[in-house]
Amino acid sequence: MNILVINGPNLNMLGIREPGIYGNDNYESLVKKIEDHCKSREIDVECLQSNHEGDIVDMIQQAYFDKVDGIVINPGAYTHTSVAILDALKSTGIPAVEVHISDVSAREDFRQISYVSYYCFETIMGEGLDGYIHAIGLIEEKLGEEI
Ligand code: DQA
Image (cartoon, rainbow, N blue to C red; front, side, top):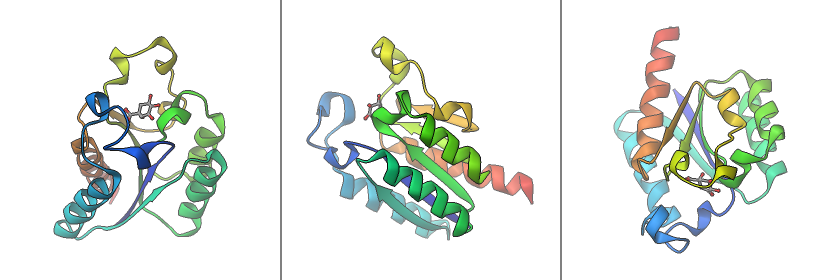
């Protein structure tokens, strides 16, 4: 099983940006946490981050050609604006879970719309960095059901 984890804009600033909301752990420790977990589960994982919408579209399209089994995506602020990222996910047909470190449902009105949620089979929010591990578990379950 191979999973692609995509983080969008400003998630490279974890540990620096608004620690009261996003915590003190940096992006590198997030990647290590995901890689250690996936190693223990014998899952191949790749973690990518970009601040650019088109790059994220390219990553999702590439996942199709690379035959990725599942996608975990935190599109950052593009969650609330990007039809292009939604359309890219829809193009691939790859099962995907949306993750937010913070509880976006309890935040500003402009964060209440999520375009990717029209595609993702589950949304996890407010679980901090553990939300990514939760999302990987949901993808494992989903892929298990499909076999
Ligand atoms: C976020 C929530 C978004 O509203 C915000 O723009 C982010 C991070 C989260 O992980 O909680 O950049 O996706």
